Length: 358
Image 1 (cartoon, rainbow, N blue to C red):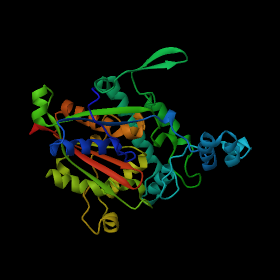
Image 2: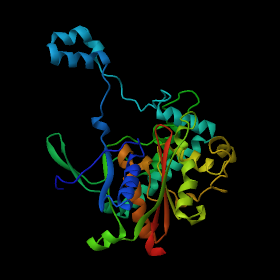
Image 3: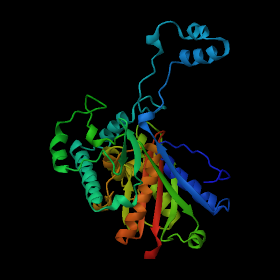
């Protein structure tokens, strides 16, 4: 792209990709841009790690006053210079995301068996979609250097393609976040991966002028927040109703659901709380629940979700939106809903419409 093209970064944890899409829509609707590329990326294999403050301050002083200033600030024991460990910690509580996921499972009575069933379905759906060639429409091959040799990455590498073998192994896995009373295992948690996603966004008029398809549009979006303790990952529950209202739709109008699978427990708790008056009394000032019955799981993450495909944080929103847009076209369905939880007690919901089905 030419250097005159401006850009900016947005950060909303796991909902960053969806946030960038909403900003793109607002720029276009407000007349501030005609075409926007929105998306996100994360590289967990190149993640930053925290250094002790004495070390960072010592390095800064060394640049100013010489190398001995480093030792004056950081000390002479190299063991104290080591960086801290990598942990996905919710800053407001000091607990890991997995710990919160386990707590959500406990509070909402989500069994380990149900979590494992959802995880197996995610992998099975992804394997079926891959075999059908659906992901070829979405994945851009990447060439990497592997031990001095060039290798092309053309597919996701965390998917369990033998789901029967996976089902047999899951019951023997130990809880990874809460040793006592925990139910979340490695199999029912999303895998941290490297990845990126991008969405080309423009008005219908501009798309027609440039020769792009105009058959899928962003109907509405809504971002919500919840007290991080104790239901950290359930903020999207509070966003479904407003997003549906903005789109002029009811839950019965939704044909496909894409709920980000941070943990199988969080997905199942989201579905359960969407019809819980107790939850809405506590967190939504007594508003009526969005659902009166569970959603049809055959409409959920039909081509797999983050449990099977990985979760490169900021890239997840773009992946989910792209997957849903393509599935609406393939299936001939009209409306799809995206639901993404994020750190900080944040959540994002968006509704897409396949306009060819109007």
